[in-house]
Length: 178
Length: 178
DNA sequence: GGAAGATACCTTGTATCCGAGGTATCAAGG
DNA sequence: CCTTGATACCTCGGATACAAGGTATCTTCC
Image (tube, rainbow over all chains, first blue to last red; front, side):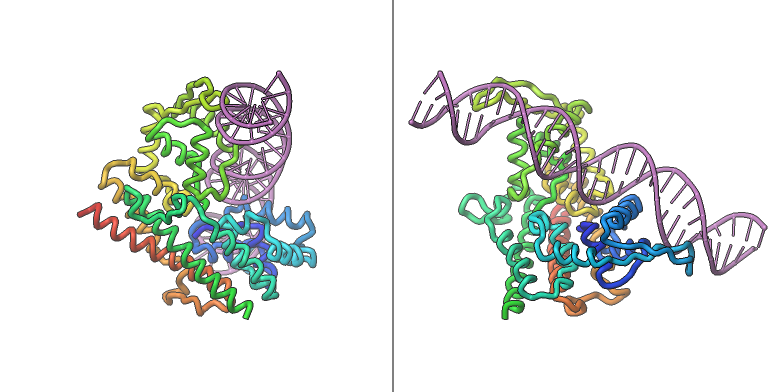
């Protein structure tokens, strides 16, 4: 699983707690299963951007374990920015799996069942649109419709993923609405 | 499903047939479920790059349906480049889902069961490595270990996807080896 | 024959991320 | 004290992709 959309993940992790860059990197790596830790060249410029945008502040702390750390905290604007992005995600955050899963990891921060349900409904609407990957015109495709085993596998995996997510979405929406 | 790694997909689609850019774009859109058609600003510069690298040739064909087309054909070097990338994929093509799924879509072109099995085994090795997303030390995680329903969903979806792929990998490897 | 619409291609600018290659701090061991 | 290793941060260059905006061709329909 590699699906981090880093800016949202940074705001999401810092919403709860203060972290320094190195720690944040480990949180992100843990969330993605340590597959491919985020590169320094991605992380540190991002933190500078977020600081310049007034979304977080950095405080230099003399080294306790090793080198001095920059302890990161979200500003009020940073906290609001996260909530805004969770509440009204851009279309890409609903349709692109990487971005959607990243959003899901932090949707708890929204702390408003109705708003959370609205976000899930957007995803549900998207997932239930007939996609050419699964349909040949009106006819649902089956794995056996593909002639090579690798395309069959692709189809099988995609179908299982989508079905699992749909089931979960419907159950969770029932809980949130109920 | 959006998971195109465009350069490989281009070589993969052109391995079978001659296409022009606009057609290629539609093939790619169909493979990803028409979610987000590839942007012109991605496709046409890519085709130029591949042509400059000697992997494909373009032949101008006076317009039959509308504007004139550039019919694309892989060169011998282009065909070999695809086979090389399928046979010995870079690590990222095994660990990153987008790239891996793109590779799977064209693995049939390799046309060598032993080499195909070797590629699947690399994926199997990667997927069976204990990942922190699924394990807390030695203990396998469960959805119930997460306190918010959205992280639970994420875990449920990831687990289902991984399990489905593992099952398929083992079955397909048995077929290829047998 | 002129407008509309689909087809077909192209350029420029931007966003997001990685990789390589640095610098600096502090603890532990020889 | 000096090296090693872990921690911690930074910069530069490049890869991959999108978005906006443009040009041109050909068919269809009025």
